[in-house]
Image 1 (cartoon, helix red, strand yellow):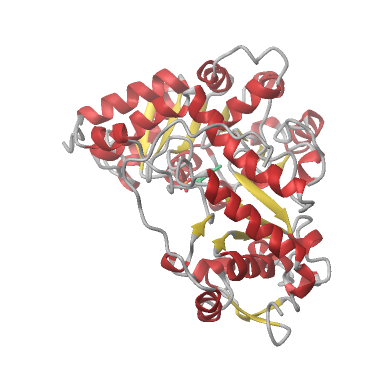
Image 2 (tube, protein in one colour):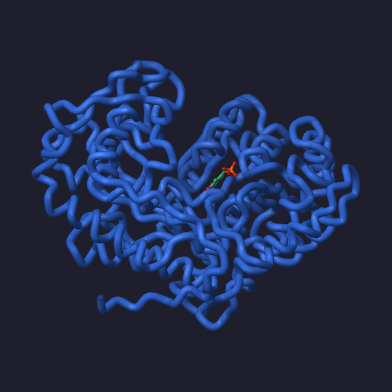
Length: 465
Ligand SMILES: *Cc1c(COP(=O)(O)O)cnc(C)c1O
């Protein structure tokens, strides 16, 4: 391969064996799992790209720090180290620990969102949207149109469309908007970044109406890296400085430390406003635990504290995003249709284009991940009609514009040879796509979050000829 790949800036001290399976074993596993990769057991998967959430490899320094975990119920010294790290790198004064990101969203949403409220955002994230809807809010997508086009090479597909934002404020009235919820990067758009320039304009609009901006900071370090690569005037700055600037334009953040911070569990909510912090600390006790541990063990806070420091190291973030890009570029060179540009944490395969002979009703993305598992032993996740579910009012299946398979890359977990194996496997599936005999159809369809538990059967007598 000619393509450059940044070296992994670490060497391996502990190894974890991965299952090596035969095609016959995988065929059997697929039938048992009802052709749903969510229902495969992890020990049936060779390279697991289901998610980058909590699947990170921790460093020796993180493991060492865990021994220093102070498990005191009140005032754990691990909390004060954790608080200082979030304050230093993200810049918010009030830091409230939570057991993971969605817990921070729950608390924030309960503090700010009332029935009849409207919340704009640059595309939705499933858990964010659920929390705002459960509190009676209505979500409005104000992301730029390019975000919905898999072939647009726009460098900042996470940007907010300011005209859509202003029109939305006019329509519902600023008094009914308790916050702007801004994601960096935008997962559902393919891990695409927002620019500092765009966020500064969003800040101006927010200031005109006195509305706070909350940042979903799960992958803000990856976003800062893209700003350094792509935004005019930013290339000489450190990722840590850019991260600080991103946060400085916002009033608070919700964080899943299972992403950028190299942890396996944990999260936080951080805000500038004293009264909001007090309200949030009141709720963290109800849902999570004391405001100095928030559902985490002291050792979990230690792992995050050290993970934050490592996350902004330039060679670390370069290798992280570079590894994802390497896999994406190999697929692009082979002509495999993917969402472009390549995002920070995942590759999104355009299943509707790859399996154009499989009708939408026969679930091309679900079919493609099943075939990829069968042929390559790689697990991805469906991001198409199965995930979109049914329209609650009509009961009809929703067919979103994008019918994708997501391959999320855990941080520091797999090597370049694993990426090559994934690329080779997917290129094989792509070349042999006409051998995929048909699609899949539901044989069991749960009502809520159907993609986790659904079972399918092939519409032809075999899945792959
Ligand atoms: C993972 C994630 C969350 C939710 O965090 P959990 O730690 O999984 O609860 C929220 N927003 C984004 C963008 C995420 O990726």
